[in-house]
Each structure stands twice: as C-alpha cells, then as structure tokens.
Amino acid sequence: MTVDQDKLTRKQKKDMNLLRDQDGIPSYFIAQLGKNDMFKYNIKGKYLLDEAVNIVYECVEMLGGNIVWLEANKGADYIVRFHKNNGFIELQSEIQEDKVERIQLVKYLNTE
Image (cartoon, rainbow, N blue to C red):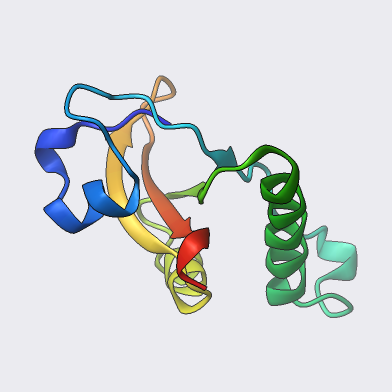
C-alpha cells in the first residue's frame, strides 16, 4: 500500500510502524470481495469478510505483518459503513486510473 505520510496522523504512522521517508507499506490487500446475487440470501457479508481476514491472519503467522486493507467506491456508503462496522477504519481516498474515487480502509491486526 502506498500512503502520503503528510496526510496521516501521528497515531496512524505509529500503528503502521512507518519510517520517516517510507511511502510503501508491506500489507495484505483484500480484493474482489463480494457476493453473487444468486447466493445473496444464503451467505452473509460478515461471514465472507471474516473468512478473508482469517486467511490473512494465517499469512501473518507465516510471514509477519500487521495491516490488512481493502477499497470501496467513495459513493458506496453502505459498503463503507459495513467495513467500518467490522473493524476497518478509513485511511485515505484517491481517484484511480478509471477515474473512480475509492476509499482505502485498513485494519491493524496487532490491536485485536
């Protein structure tokens, strides 16, 4: 994950163990988390997210690290709220190559 340290709070920098001039952070990225509409009533979103984070915890045991992150479209209030309710916090937002603004949400694994 790449961050602009000028936009981070002192606590965020501490939680990420950032060095002064470091802009890349070793982390785990959860991509393409979603449900097929055919199964939208059979599987809860919280279950999928918990399973993804549990896999990251297994990776942490083998490789180390303490940050997992994901992205959500800035206008997708329900999705952003869902992730925040499940322990993720908003870190930053950026307009990406496809001209869509996405919010990056992080979860610090060393705090649980």
